[in-house]
Amino acid sequence: MGCSKNLVDSETLMGLFERYGYQCTHDSDHPEGEIVVINTCGFIEDAKQESIDTILEFAQAKEEGRIRRLYVMGCLSQRYQQDLQKEIPQVDKYYGKFNFRQLLSDLAVADEHEVQTCEGCRHLTTPHHYAYIKISEGCDRHCAYCAIPIMTGRHVSRQMDDILDEVRRLVAGGTREFQVIAQELTYYGIDIDGRQHIAELVERMASIPGVEWIRLHYAYPTHFPWDLLRVMREHPQVCKYLDIALQHISDPVLQRMQRHISKAETYELVDRIRREVPGIHLRTTLMVGFPGETDDDFRQLMDFVRWAKFERMGAFAYSEEEGTPSARLYTDDVPSEVKERRLSDLMALQQEISVEVQGRKVGQTLKVVIDRQEGDYYVGRSEYSSPEVDPEVLIPVSEGSLSSGHYYPVLITDADEFDLYGSIASSPCKSRKHEQ
Image 1 (cartoon, rainbow, N blue to C red):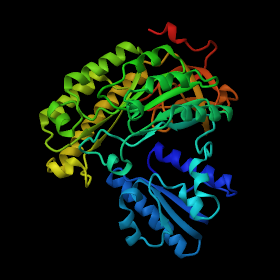
Image 2 (cartoon, rainbow, N blue to C red; image 1 turned 90 degrees about the vertical axis):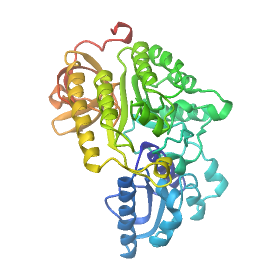
Image 3 (cartoon, one colour; image 1 turned 45 degrees about the vertical axis):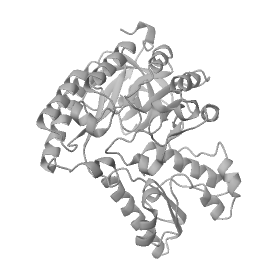
Image 4 (cartoon, rainbow, N blue to C red; image 1 turned 60 degrees about the vertical axis):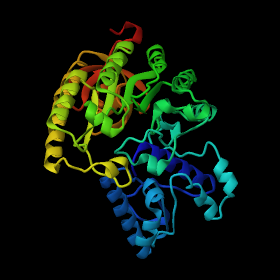
């Protein structure tokens, strides 16, 4: 459950189980089997409730004899392990975010040291041609509204050679596209030697034969590593795509959020990214209804979105999370109906922008990877779209036989706010050096 970082942990545990002779199924819809492991999310209230409901469902399945053992891991149990043990005792054992490998030794199927040091044990649940690469865990930023540091602790970077070795193993297995993920991507390396090494890491990844696309998720705006833009500009393997959560634009709100960046600096950041990487698609996340947000603060946010014209944008209304600085320091004083109205207005504006952004692609020939077939269409993505969260490219099956994981030049013939429509082009895709 939860984010792609949780998915990597689940895939690692599945790989370990299979290494020691188990058969694994990634399917939460059918509570049957010898052992069930639930990897939980604890980020916001809705995610916590979904995790709890899932645990209760499988606890019932255990009581009915449909499963024999039930284990829980992840962010929710990292944060609320004692409460969960008390309230849902049917679970055989709760693990957190960092000790889940111990499950194998607890089951007496492997030595604890062996499972802790095992590398290369991973069962991809994504289509074979793409994978998520987690380069660090934890976060040192301590934004006022965020509970992630409470669950994950301080930022810890993986060793660069270990990451590159994992990429090489996945390439050898047929993976060509990599989503680089972390709680805070741009902080990579700070805990190792005090310097940001994300640009070096991505450049070295791009040099590995067989790597087709690298896409970057969850950058932080403060102290942005500008050399990363050179890498994105110079290496065609690095997609012109950056996921960077900005949250807000009003100085008073940014200060209360403890974002350590100003309105002026945020405008300059977005402008410089676009200037240095022409054609880049920016994905961001924004928040409405943070304590103290006024009508003027929200007006500034709307003006910012009109100016920035983000190609991809998500937004959510503030909800108080226990233990965070904002819960301790501020009163949740923006009425829920105001939050919902602001959220609706913001997303309506983004919908207009999305229609414009998508429409500009009509007539272009894009390089598209095929993910799957659904009904009468092949479903693919360009470098500007990450799996599951971004617009897709739909190609009629009448175009011919296309293969999942293969790349094709696709002429975009139509667009709506969500998806693009196209046909296989007779001429190859435009190279980067010819882009305007």
